[in-house]
Image (cartoon, rainbow, N blue to C red; front, side):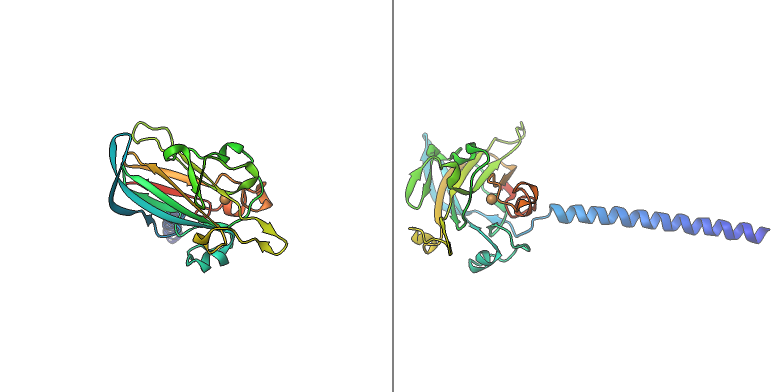
Length: 243
Ligand SMILES: [Cu+2]
């Protein structure tokens, strides 16, 4: 009788221990998974600071710049040296996490190599939040694109907050026209006539955390074109840190 009792209590102790160990393992796995999911898929891209300054509305700002590319697939991204992404989706490169200096005149250049269909929200065909309300496309300043002329957008935003400055920039990227045999050559030597070069500038406020995403539904058909690249992190979405 005594033996049975001691066996069953040591069994109880073992199952309690197993339960605790399993619990720790589950919490650890969940924590690790969440950490992995929220980690940067690529190395952050730091804007290049310039020694030049620029005066806007009577105020002087330091200058910085960053260059991004948008590619129709993994192969095109790799051709331009960007191989960090796992899936063969449309993608921005070389990083979905941009780090920009605070209170700075930031000039961004985006080389865009993809085609497109139609925006579901024509608002995102407008250029918003840039200096002069314009962007430069292959040498020409424009303030909007038609809904059917957009391949992707670069849309930077933050939540309304009293702890950081507001920042909103929307830039639609013009499509590369397609023919029977694929993309047609463009007039843009900056992309070796394979895409468009878009440049625009905006002024950052103080330090803060922001996000950007593409507002053109460019994913696969699984969720009304919001699947694949649009539902995976780091292809058509990312972070912007102002520091
Ligand atoms: Cu997109």
